Length: 540
Image (tube, rainbow, N blue to C red; front, side):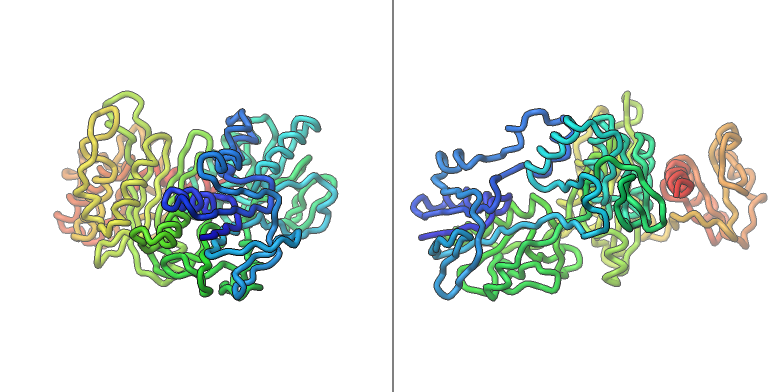
């Protein structure tokens, strides 16, 4: 059997290696139009910042390695000009005709760089390939730029901006949306904005690029952001033109459409990776999510299908991801509020301020955990977490429970590792499950906003803390005094209670509700979460 793979990235290489393990006789050829294959592209920002110092570390599997261990013929600098599905051949750009029995498209995506006026006036770069990182590193080393501007606030943009700061460059980041890291909700990303600003990154949000001048990047607002170099990181576009020309079905956004076995509409042609449309695991709608993990799994799935080795379907992409922003980590899975609203999906949310491990054990770090869920069924729709430690394991647990069809009750009941250096007896996973069940049982109503009009705000923190800083108009009744001072609060108005993190306010809310107060709210996340929102809002 002759198998041709177009594209040597995560999906294509993963397929080829798995296919060889299943079939030692197949002829497997990878056609890669660049001079790179199996590059750790997610590590490129850290290579630029010299966090990863060895260039060789960026090569996951060299063509020589793939040939020696797997007998895979990797042809670099070999672009494909045409696919002929009727003849079952591909024609390379140098006119070589290569026959196939099975064809796997791992075409990937390329950075989108719009044409704006003045692009030739400043050095402009993008970050997709190892050679891109080489060019950026060489420019910084040789030209010694002082000011860098990153355009785009996605994963790559944020990571590149951080690493440019590590190199000592004055760095600005421009994002047309109102926030960076769009998979996060605005209330969660506030901590990321603050962290970036604290580390010297100037954020220009809600602002697009008008043009580039010799002085820098001119924004739609008219501001000029000084720059010696510009890095574009506003997203990628699928490279599927040759697929469309061959009659392979692509959607309106240019992504290849496949079935659950990653088969295209044409016989014996499969597709995987960043160039394919996938099913969103939560909404069950078509989407496109460029992540290395799903691409690798899709490649493996295709190999099992071709080899008839217990073939199994692809069950959708959750969009589980994680990003480092200086000493903070942000992770997420499933849908966020924007996606749920766009899909007209009813949802509720809960947010807690937890700790990475037992609070009485030294060096516990705060973390913020948010879960979106269906109030009727308890289905988990998405989750986000931000903190310095333990963020990844909380989102990994929730992502796994989601994948297995679990509900918020399973968060409450999850039996997780406990020892003081690693967690509390009630892990944040358990705590947020309990908090959600309290809401579903009608024991408390959470509040998340910044609008306190027509509310009586009750600050139940100690008086000395209240005196330092508090919500304008809030009255201070320490939690321990609430039972003896109930007569100070009106029963005909909404009472909004807040504490440090949200637990004590829940306890006070229960006291009020059981003493005849009908309209009681507890501020989710407490003062600590409120402060993160206000700090970010004041910067905008």
